[in-house]
Length: 267
Image (cartoon, rainbow, N blue to C red; front, side):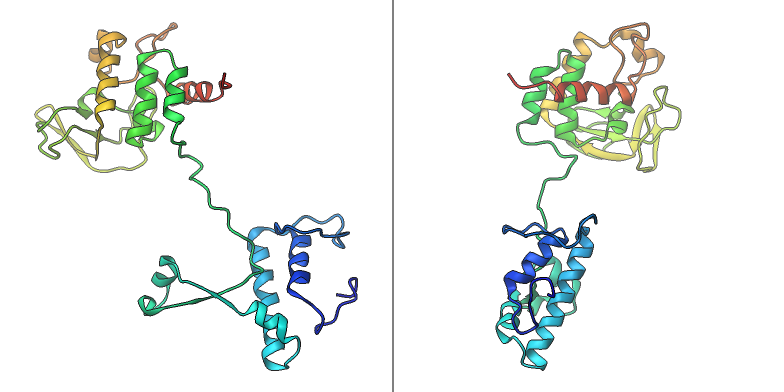
C-alpha cells in the first residue's frame, strides 16, 4: 500500500488481485515491478491462506467500520455448494450457497497423472512389436492393473471362461494374489487372503477381464509363450529374448517397454 500510495479506503479488488499475482498467483494483468525481489512465490496453500486473510480484513473493515464498502461488496460473494461441501457439514443437504473468495487461486482440474488419455492405447499398440507387449498395454488399460500385479500373475490365477471352478464370479476374471516368492520379485500391494483348493485358486482380489484382454492373452500364449515356462515357474509374462529367455519378466522390463513405446515421436 505504501509503494502504490494506497489507503484502506482507496484499495480496489484489482489492487488485491495484483498483490496476489506478485505473491505467486496466476492473474491476467500486469504486475509492475515486484517488491519481493529475490524471494520465491508462495505455494498454493499459502496463497489460499493469504486470500482468506485479505478477504476477512477488508470485509470486516467494510461491515464494521463502513470503510471502503465497494470493496466489501466485491469480496462478499457466494457460490453453489458442491457435493463435497454438502458432505462436510451437518445438514449439508439443505445448503443453498457457500461463501466464495474472488482472491483465492484457481485450482487446476486435470486428469490423474497415472491415467492414460483416450487415444493412448491405440497409439501405444502401434509402437509395440510383440504379442506380449500388446497384452501388457491392453491389460494395463482395460483392467487397471498395477505393474506389480500384472507381472506377478500366474497361469492358475487366470479364469478366462464363464462359470469357472472357483464359483466366485460367473464372467471371466482374474485372481490377484499376493506372493512373496515370485522369481521376478513382483509383488501385489493389497494382501487379500487366498488359497488353492483342488488346484483352483480361490480368494485374492477378483477383477473382471474384457474380451480384448482375453484375445491378446490367447494370442500371446499361442504365438510366443514357451511351453517349458508353464512347468518351470508358471508365471504369465516371460522374457522373449536374451540369455534369460523364458524366465519371468521383471517389472522394470515392463516399465521400460511402456516408456519406450510412449516416448516415440509421432510421425
